Length: 289
Image (cartoon, rainbow, N blue to C red; front, side):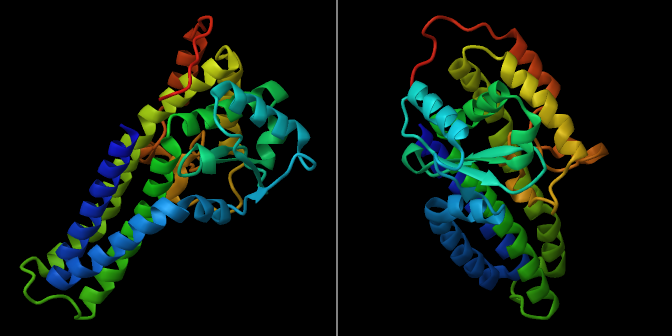
C-alpha cells in the first residue's frame, strides 16, 4: 500500500511539473519539464533525505556525543521493531524536529538544539516517538519526495516563465503568455496542495503511533504545546524552505491570516486534544506492516 501511495505521489507531482511546462512553453516546455520530473523522481527517491539534512546543516552524532538522545532513539526503535535510525542535531535555537529516509533501514531523526533546551527528557522522547512513528508508518519517503518535488516545481515555473518572456517559448502553444502566467501562479499552489493532503492526516497518525510507543499521549501533548509557541517566538535563523515545512513536527513558518489556511500541519490545539483523549490499551502497539 505504501509503495502504491509513493507511486501515486510521484505521478501527481510529475503531472504538475509536465503541465507547468506545457502551459508555459508548449511542446518544448513539456519536454523540459518531463526531463526535470524524471531527474527529480530519481533524486527524490535516492538522495532527498541527505539533501534535506544538508539543507538544515544537521550533523550526525554518535552515542559518545549524545548518549541520552541515542538511548531514547534506541529504546523507541526497539519498541517499534525497526533498525535504530541515525541521530542528527540541527544547530538552531528554533525548537523543532523531523525524520527522513527512504525506508526504516536508512532513516534519520533530527532535532534542533533549541528543542533539547526547551523540553524535559520525557517530552524529548515523546517527540522522538512521533518522528519514529513517521518512519514506522513509511511517511518519510513520501515527505522527502514531496519536499524535493515542490521546490523543483517552483523553480521550473520561474525558469520557464523567464524563457517564455525572453521569446523562447513554443509559438505553437495556444495559451502563450496567459499560460505562463497561469502556470507561474498555480503550479507552486498545486504542489503545496498536494503537500497539505499528504501531511495533515499523517501528522495525526504519527501522533497516535507516537503515543502508543510512549504508552500515553500526555508527554507528546505537552511537547507540542511548548513547541508551537516556541517555534513562533524563536524562529529559524534563516526562513525555512516552504517545500520542506511539512516535514517538521510543528510548522516552522510563521504564517498569519490567510497564510495559515494553507498550513501543511493540522491545528496544534486539535492534535493536543486528540492526544489527551487517547487511552492506551495493553500491548496495543504492533509493528506496522
